[in-house]
Length: 165
Picture 1 (cartoon, rainbow, N blue to C red):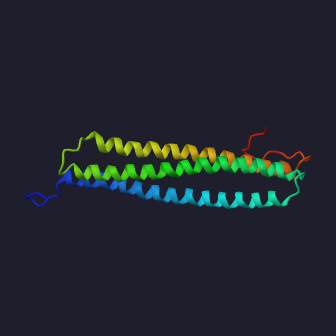
Picture 2 (picture 1 turned 90 degrees about the vertical axis):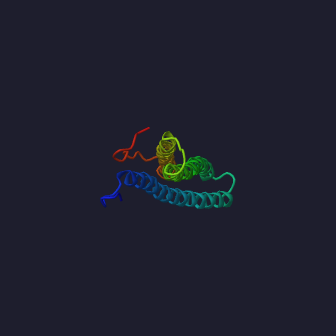
Picture 3 (picture 1 turned 180 degrees about the vertical axis):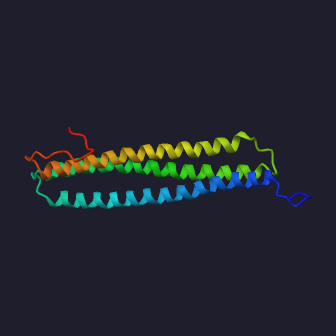
């Protein structure tokens, strides 16, 4: 507040600039939790498939399908693990943005530094989205393998929105 009792707008801007990245930190935390859950489910599914593969006779045709599906899950796992690393990188970038904005009140922090930090977090979030979409595509490939095994000789119409091969 100034001498007239009104709020100093520069203080409000600083608080807003510090709070915006804090909201993004929360979003990154939620995103990381979701990615971790997906990775955990994939790991459990991969273990189930490996147990099934080991239990089947060596010449069983399902073993090859399981091998292909495990390879797809492995690629999905890698994509999501990288996305999770990026989520934590974005989280750190947003925390640093808040610290830079708050530090500007006391120290000579260049104006560009918090902007670069925030921008880094946003770019990482964009890459996370790309990796998640690539993982979804691989998930569809795994489902297609299952369908191919289930309906080997049947000619099924493609569901709405799905590409035909």
